[in-house]
View (cartoon, rainbow, N blue to C red):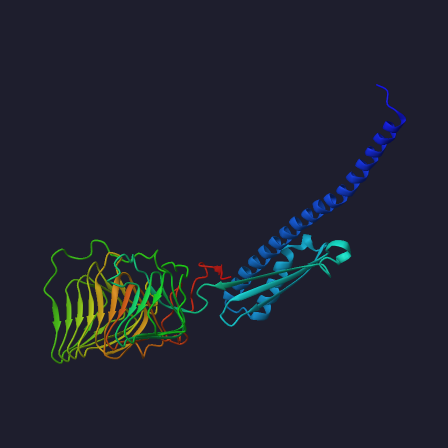
Length: 419
């Protein structure tokens, strides 16, 4: 086909316009592609820095949980740790990390990164600034002194875990009070401790400091211990041993088949060692039960009751398998251990009731004269005017603290990010 000169000129003009238009479109398209790539890269770098401070905060919290650690060393360790996680970004991002402990006991790591922006750092001016932060906490930073291990909480009418009612109170200065379920205060009851936390919900008021909800569960520190002695208890027990009047009696350690009842003004002294009770122990009236370097272990469904004006003064085992323990129940024991006397002045050691309930409804202080006490029970119920006093003077008591509680807490529960 033949084209006139005018037509040829027109076609060349159209092609020229198309080239110009394409060139005009290509420049912004290229800029959009570059900006998109850069923004994706920026997002990736921020995510990397966030992961770095998360990991560093957890590492710093773990460092602070180790005995003998100090804040300065932990801070430096965490800052270096964070920088090492993203060292490959340093050619294009100038980064700085700072670590510190905050007032709430958390370990915080913050990071700031500056990287180049578009058009010679003009958009935005000075380049992009990346800010990241994480707060972690070490679980069980304080001595673990009260631990409730409720099985379930399906019955809302029967609160479980740790329950304080009427004007009762728990006083556990500088240590951790924890429930793996809920925690409940009713009426004017109070709970005072170094840290108070519940894995579900802390209900009611009277917590000092405020209780933390949603805490991770604390593993039963003694779950691997064998307690029950198979085949040692008679199917038909002998008649109860009743010690009454003004009798003074010493009960040597060993396996006790009969029920023990101490009443009147009688005094029973437990000889040093392990006392395995196949039946219940009741101390009432003005009776006294005392012993040093002893542990009372209760067979299936056998109870311990200290009632009326009875006096209890027990110091736990200093040596042996049950070193550090003072009262223990078998895992098949689901009974209630009751302390309703206000003259229970000393329970030095660990009370371990893995599936039993501890009821304290005394009209005064319990365990106040103990250098230290630890309570681990399925449910812990305080009622009336009872005041459970938990001391933490672990040194010089003569009774070693079992691994997993007190100042011998395990770090196996690790750390968690709070924010």
